[in-house]
Every structure is written in C-alpha cells, then in structure tokens.
Length: 111
Image (tube, rainbow, N blue to C red; front, side, top):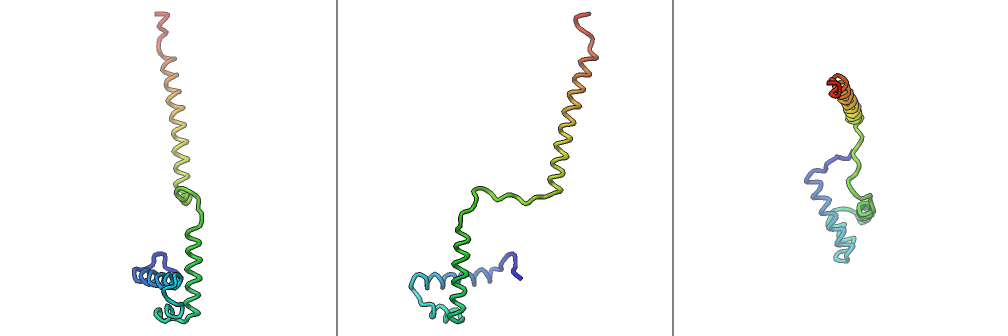
C-alpha cells in the first residue's frame, strides 16, 4: 500500500534515484554504472527509468487552467441551498411588511 505522504527518507531516495537516471540520460554515466551505484540490476534500473519517464510525461501533460474543482460536500451544499431559501423568504417577508405598513398609514390626502 502506498503512503499518502512519503517520508523524508523516501523523498531523499527518490531524488537520489532521479539524479542517477538523469546522469544516465545525459550521457554522464552508463546504465550499468548507475545500477551498480544504486545496488540494483541493470534490468531493474531500466524499469525504474521507464517509470520515472512515464511519470514525468504525465506530470508535464496539459491540464485545465485554474484551480482544480473542490470535491463536492453534500452537507455543505445542502446548507448553502437552505441559506438561499431562507434569504428568499426573508426578502418576501420584508416586502410584505413594507406593504402592510403602507396600507396602515392614514391617507395623507384625506387629512
């Protein structure tokens, strides 16, 4: 099972492996030398390299601009709808009260 947050040690190992892979890809080292330095077989090195390059392509792919949408929270959405409904009812009550007050005022023309 993958940890949601890699530990500092895991991150350091990943950075070290990435450095070896980049040295091989740039021609500084051979895959065989990098594998020896990492203490793995050359076959395992190539497997890691393929995974690293695939992850880089995925990370650099086009994405929609802006912030990602927030996950839906049904309880929060229900509360927002309820607040909107209450606000609409309040506006109707305020308008009704204004009309009632106008109707109760004595007609100024008759006075």
